[in-house]
Length: 314
Ligand code: NDP
Figure (cartoon, rainbow, N blue to C red):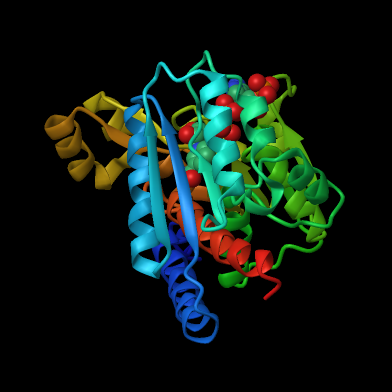
């Protein structure tokens, strides 16, 4: 008997879904302006000179322009104190023009991050990090949902991936990804396991998952033996690799352009999932780049639109 050759995992393209969401937001922004004279405005606060954070803020500002949201960048020096940043947040809270406030993380170590996130008015908290929004999500009554987790659910839904009843495993328990995505999956009736650095025999746990979410921050940490055959693998991680041999091992036949990138700018991006090994066993997986990162930005646009509407009772 001839054994049929297994197809590699299908790639869940983040761009297609992100573009759909942004088009929907753009249409609603146009309607808000035409019918109510309202133009949503996002204030994006960036403190310090972290390169990656600057790129993230630039992408968010560019997306605002695409969908018709006004963006207001506040770039502050690394020497900014907690008191100074709190004063800016209060000003933005009080400003009637501002609908959404985004504070790009991580903040410089000297700044008290928790008190800054708590200072953002819950009604303008488009990142969903304020304790009252975190609490509502944990209670199963989400208001503003953090953008990356919301984007993951949206990607699953728009690719007709049924969540209810499935075993879902989330590796990572951060406030911005792991915990909220686990809450959302639970709300959608998955049976959810949350793993972290103290989990014993991690591959044995992750291999049970029909939906596996990796939010760890370690390049290609999830190997083939962590994945259940046919599983949907969502790769949240964004890591830099600089070694050409690593790129060869991770990207197989696709390594050429990765090696070119390393030679040109010194690095290429890889997720938390080993791409070649995942392709050999998963049913579907998200790529890095081109996956969840794009959805994160699209969901920020949607949350900002939502904030503009809710604040006005629309
Ligand atoms: P954090 O560093 O806050 O959390 C990492 C989590 O991974 C922790 O819960 C940690 O466990 C767990 N972990 C670390 N090592 C292991 C291990 N050996 N085994 C099991 N679990 C482990 O990261 P974030 O959640 O903020 O981000 C995760 C990744 O996602 C990063 O690469 C980040 O850049 C990326 N990211 C991407 C976004 C996007 O839009 N695409 C948005 C946000 C993040 P413990 O709690 O025990 O320490």
